[in-house]
Amino acid sequence: MDVYLARQPIFDRNREIFAYELLFRGGMENFFPDIDGDSATSRLLSNTFFNTGLEQITGGKRAFINFTRELIMKRAAMLFPAQLTTVEILENIRPDCEIVDELKELVREGYVLALDDFLYSPELEPFIELADIVKIDFKQSSHQEIMADAAWYLSKDKKLLAEKVETSEEFDLARSLGFTYFQGYFFSKPQLIRKVDIPTLKMNMLNIMAEARKDDFNFGRLESLISRDLGISYKLLRYLNSPYYRRLSEISSIRQAIVMLGEKGIHQFLGVIILSELSQDKPDELLKSSVIRARMCENFGTLKGQRDSSELFTLGLFSHIDAILDNTMEHIMTMLPLSESIKKTLLGEKTALSDYLDLATSYEYAAWDSVETLSPALGIAPENLPQIYLDALGWADSLCAVENS
Image (tube, rainbow, N blue to C red; front, side, top):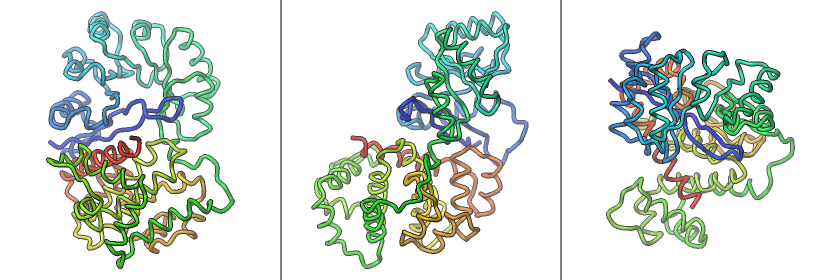
């Protein structure tokens, strides 16, 4: 059975990636709302991690994984490297002697324990004593309850993870209360909507990106343009020599790199590089998410036989542009030379492109019910989705590694 896996970022206090929580669901041909947690997790372990590799899925970051009581008792967590694995103890597990002994063994082996969806009760004290991290759901408790709980756990020297943080204001609140880690999609929202024009320098970058996509863009002019920019030249060569491409011999010239990528590939690369310049003051995950969506949308279009899947790539790439520029999507769309189809889609209108972006976003957010609906509507075989997503993760992580080098 295919395993559907998505990763959700976990940030530190500097909005940098600390880890990813892995979210999953079984293949859609056997989609059951009441699927057993143990069987679902077992398929994740056997079909995904052992074939793909934990480090590849998380880009080398720590992984938070939910383990049921049965899997803990079977020592399934020990199949994964302790230095990369945080074992999340589900809220429905009761702390009897057997499970506590197994968790103590995990701690001795160097695993980090986290309490998931945790609401305090005295009987859970044995878990609290063993855990390093307590996750507190910002949607489940009032601010007053969160403040009281945070103060109590901090007095016990526990690190706190704020879960379902959806706005910058919630992030700031959690940070002020002493939380160390933050999970949610607050990073993908504009921090402060500005009603002023986009700075000229940023508009120039956006226009260069649009100009580079013209049909009559000459390869020789492109080589000259890239060669004159040391930063882009370096990043281009680093990108093509990255592990994602697994080349037997290094690319050593700009012309060689352009030929290797082709016109479409080099246009995409320039788009990502320029978008990364625009998002320098933003969490790296914002660029990664943009690139993941771009790659997924493009591959959806390729599977569907769309003649110009590059339009779908651009759609995904610009899907976070409001958060990157801290401006309204409406204002940004009036400034950019994008196709009307892309503009209307990004403004929330229903277009021929909408379902592609919705499918990529739903998969990214692990909204499996929406994925189940959108995939057949687009005529995309469900068994293709996991590989498309993993390819997008690898591509995005590789590009962002180049950006950070």
